[in-house]
Structures are given as structure tokens and as C-alpha cells.
Image (cartoon, rainbow over the protein chains, first blue to last red):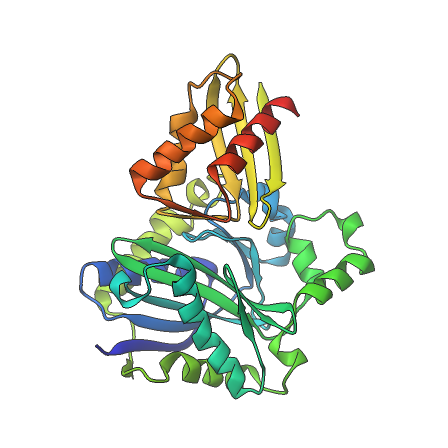
Amino acid sequence: MKWRVIPLETHDAYKNMSIDEAVLRAIADEKAQSTIRFYRWKPSAVSIGTFQSMRKEVNVDRCRELGVDVIRRITGGGAVYHDFEGEITYSILGPMGMFPRGVRESYRLVCGWIISGLEQLGIKAAFAPINDIIVGGKKISGNAQTRRQGVLLQHGTILYNTDPRTMFNVLNVSSEKISDKMIKSAEERVTSVSSHSDASMQQLYEALLYGFTKDKEFEFGNLSGDEQSSARELEGSVYRTDAWNFSR
Amino acid sequence: MDGFAEQKVPEGKLVGVRLRYGKTIEKVLITGDFFAYPENAVYRIETALEGMPSNSKAGAIAERIAEVVKVEGAELIGVTPEAIADTILKAMTE
């Protein structure tokens, strides 16, 4: 079985999440190969977990002022600020039979590929169940998974550098609380590739590409025409709608 | 009446409950950064709790939730039926 790898690309939040679901559906219909994709978010965006409340987690007004998109994912987990300059996101999609049955074990497997990529940059990272990767006790990557129609989708972010001030601006923390103390506390809990390596964003991508494809048969590819139209349809009918994004 | 409560599940994630209730639980929305496979199980849990007497004990609510989880063949990660039940009771008292 050959994996399809879609090289690093940049889209807005709505397109990024629509593509993930379109590929999931295509794999479920046996019309697409198992897929690894890498992407960035432009404009920067906040994504929330599928069960989270948008208004509670996100300062929606501030996001609008700053031109930051807001979107609900189909995966659980927490709110993430996807800074265009600050991270690389990946998605991995394949029939569930390709992955360990246990949720924790399947996280461990895919997170292992990220850890292997970071190792290329001389960064020693470790899996921190349920769904994080840490370096020196601090989170460098958050990951989330869904399993539907017989397909497993895991996506996650690898932090390249952090901007805690903007993060606190867009996530729902009142401005009085954005004290230096709080930003320091974020710095104490979160780290990024740039704190451990001089690698460029491109080098981080290449290292991740290595980690994800090592020991796999793969070919570079793009979305099929069907996947592109399915993504367009999902974008309009789901991911751009308040009915979806503000459903909780 | 409307109620809301949120708590961190020990060794787990954050779970919140927003609800409308009178003598019975009328509407429940479960929020948080936990995981559920399949996700639909959470929506089924919400529906299954509607109509339960508001003075139900935590054990009875947790049992109803566990029943749905079992029927759906679902797995909750980072949250438990007991934690959701406990949060529901808190939402009705806070």
C-alpha cells in the first residue's frame, strides 16, 4: 500500500478543515489512498475541539479585529491558536485497520513519527499521553483524532515558535489577566522548535516529512477533482457556517 | 432554570455542562476538551438525559450515561460518566 503525501501547503481554516473531511470521505469510499498532508493556516486561526463552546473558549470579537479565523474541528481536544508563522500542522488519514485498535496506542504510533522528525533536528521529544508531545517537560505538539466511516484521522500541530501574547488575546482570557506572570506561565508549559534548534520552518517541514515517511512506501500527490469539489461543498455547507462553528 | 458548571476531571480533561431544568432535566449540552469515539455518543448522551428528574442522584445519572456509552460501543477519553454526572449536579446547584 502506497501512501499519498500532499506537500506543505497554505490555506485558510475553512479550506484546511474541509480538505481533511473530504479526504476522509474519499478514503471511506475507497476512492483515495491513505494520506499524509502538511499545511499552514493563513490567515492565522483558532480551532476549537468538537465539543467545546466557541464563545466560552475564544474571544471572537478580538479574532475579528485581528483578522484571525475561528473554526470548530471534527476532532475533540482543546482550542489551538494556529499562528501562520508559528507552526506546521499535519493530518494523517487511513483505514482504521492500518492503526492499532486502542486509541492511546494509535496516538503513540503517529506521535512517534513526529518524535522521529524532531530527532532529525537534534530535539529529543517524548510522547505524553493522551495526545501531547513534550520536550523537557513542555508541550511542543498537540494532536487530536477522530474515527468515522472506518477511517482514522489524526491531525496536530508542531510549534515552530510561540507568541503567547497573541494567543492570550484570541483565546478567552480577559485582558486584565494577560499579565506578565501568565505569559511566563505559558512559557513554562509550552516550548517550540526554535527554542531548541536553529532550523528554519522549511527545515522543520523536511524533518517532519522524513519522520512521517520513513519506512513507508509513498508518492507525492494532490487532491483528486472529486476531493476538491467535496472540500468546496463542505466548506460552504459546514465549515464556514455559524450553525457549525457556534453550535456549542 | 439555566445552569452551568465546569470542572477538570482528575487525570483527565475539562468537562462542562450547560443545562435547562425544572422538575426534570430539559436540555443538556456537554462541553469540554475531552475525546469521544464515536463523537455522536455525546449527542446521544445529551438526549438520553432529557426527562430525568432533576433530583436524580449522581449514581443514577452516571448509570444512564454509561448505558448509552455501552449501547453506542463508545469510548470516552479524558472524561467519565461519573464526572459528567457530577458536573450536571453542580450545574443545578451553582
